[in-house]
Image (cartoon, rainbow, N blue to C red; front, side):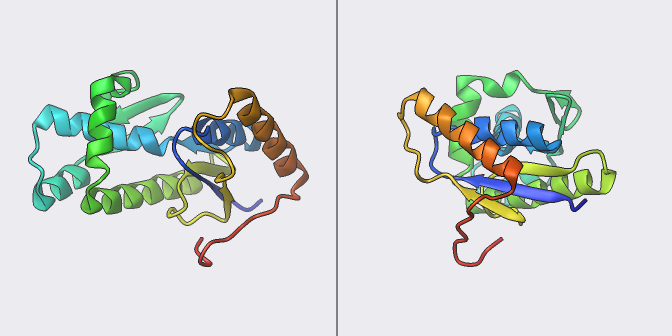
Length: 178
């Protein structure tokens, strides 16, 4: 069976992480928590008190190793699953993700993580958030809006899972990028 890479895209706060996790579980794929990857980098940025210039940020990004396994997240040799969920790290994550050099490095790290998973043969695919990661399939989640009742979001999640199971999903490609 072909290794499938699925990217979920849409605005923040609409349930992309929940849907990504559910899809990965249903398909036997790895859920790549891209937000956690940025939080790892933000946590390390905080630990090292790194300046906000491109060279320092590039070095920070290149020297940070992120691993996801068994619901744990590792940043270099430190297990950071809970540490990166603090309000302070979340705020720093939002701040650091605005730097183009960081976005480019993180995109490459996400690609490397997916390739490692593909080469290991331990998963049937990978489900990520964001469409710049070279997916086979992109689900645009733009019809959801932040603040929608969670029940509406949950109904859409169930619909998407049922549709994926029947392989009759409608995909909207944007700019022919995948």
